[in-house]
Length: 258
Image 1 (cartoon, rainbow, N blue to C red):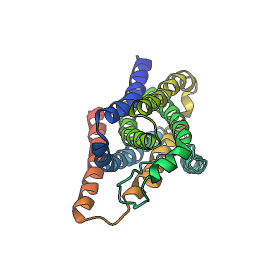
Image 2: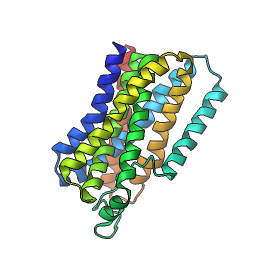
Image 3: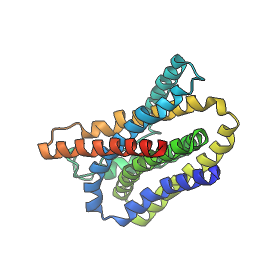
Image 4: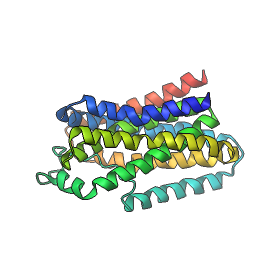
């Protein structure tokens, strides 16, 4: 039954974001991304700091110093991957207020479209392993981790769809490639179920590694997109959406524990 939950969660996470992107017009996508980025930042930080890491530390089977070393190593690892352009989460799109010249996205995506897809595939595979590890540790933890990943995947895949379309791909082909990339999460989940299950003792370390992924994406990718001078209404909107993400995680934790 656990394997079924893992497959369904990874499948939903990999496909739902593509379905959302397919159902929206370009103009709506451009307006929706900024709100989803704020919500995603709140969910990722809340899941990592309020749920996943406390679960790892409360197990009592791993030294706190070692877990913090894993956290530090994870943050540096994702930093190096991003430097290699294999872990890019580029939500930029024309009209976002960055004032790049016209067709900037098309030029940039034309040079790095393959890297975007490759990076997404690697990231989705890792997400699948993380979801498998979370479900094996605790079904409740697996569910909240899946929610965090799914909410993060939606703005990521929407942004990537915009980039690929600007690169010259048809909307249908861009969605197809993104969906194909999303299936890597299912592969990671199934492999994670069999490999991680045999090494249950490494669960605390995998959960901290998952937290490092969530924290890095939120702090190094999502929050910097929001760090610009805005009208007070937009600033309040950002805070509300971040708060909504934190409340969603808190509600999920309370509900699961009850």
